[in-house]
Image 1 (cartoon, rainbow, N blue to C red):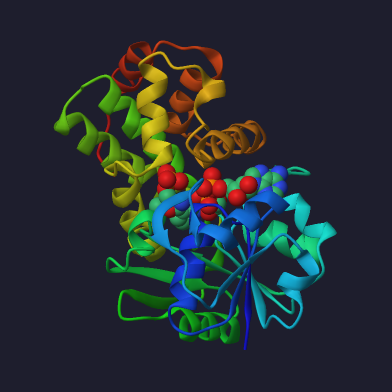
Image 2: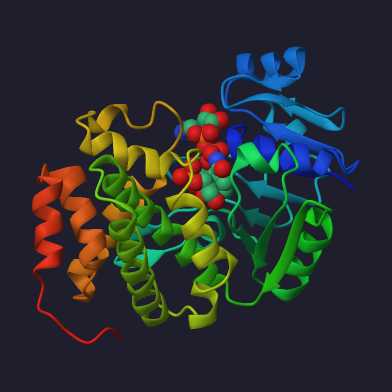
Length: 322
Ligand SMILES: NC(=O)c1ccc[n+]([C@@H]2O[C@H](COP(=O)([O-])OP(=O)(O)OC[C@H]3O[C@@H](n4cnc5c(N)ncnc54)[C@H](O)[C@@H]3O)[C@@H](O)[C@H]2O)c1
Ligand SMILES: O=P(O)(O)OC[C@H](O)CO
């Protein structure tokens, strides 16, 4: 068997390292010819995942035909903003989305697997959890969830499960993917708390109320409550909001320290910046409350002073905790 990984950024490369180290022939599709050539020549992804050796079974290419030909399935490890490129690629029999994002399309809030299914017309499952590429690729232990149609989730579990990457299955595809989109917005907020040096109490309070926001919103959107307390939910929220690796947390910190919005992606994609836009567009239609996400949006896109955003959150009507 063979697997194709679409996207040679940090996450696509780490997943490729994981599979190839199990002896699974894995193609890694890079966007640019020069990048694929550099990966093959150097056996390292110096641009996106430096310091990790690429195993022999990992084959970087920029040729979509070559990557997808004979693949049992394709792993989508593209940033959400690049998913539309899938419609120009040859089709895989089915897809495993490793992208974490949210989309507002034609009046609906869509998850990456929904958008991949719309673009390709093929069945799609999703992989999500507390999984920083820098650690997964160095075989530090973690766990993850594959959600979706049972046969696909079981197969992905079998293919990815390893002594350092423990994979669970879930039938709650919507919930698992909402977790991945929402936690990035909260990680931006957590980074803002770090940047303002508001302290451990403030960060814990923010994340606890943020988790409540995820649960309330996510269950109203069709996710199951238990999913939000699982690996893709609380697990990934903690991993992202406390990590020095996280581009989302780091972007929040850099933003409140005065760095320009346009520069925040120079260390890799910051999905929360796109997810929060989709949430705000959707919220205007649905009329739901998302106070923390709204504060993140206003600080990032409307220049609201982050301390003013904080004081607005703190001065909301006092109420019971639930
Ligand atoms: N990095 C992680 O630890 C991690 C872990 C889990 C999930 N994810 C998710 O995986 C997805 C990819 O993240 P990443 O960390 O690999 O990103 P990255 O910033 O490291 O790399 C992005 C990759 O996408 C390519 N790309 C950018 N724009 C493109 C376009 N228009 N068309 C085609 N390719 C394009 C870049 O060339 C690069 O190879 C995101 O949704 C992210 O949330 C990342
Ligand atoms: O670097 P970030 O903020 O995109 O987070 C990466 C992963 O989603 C962590 O699980």
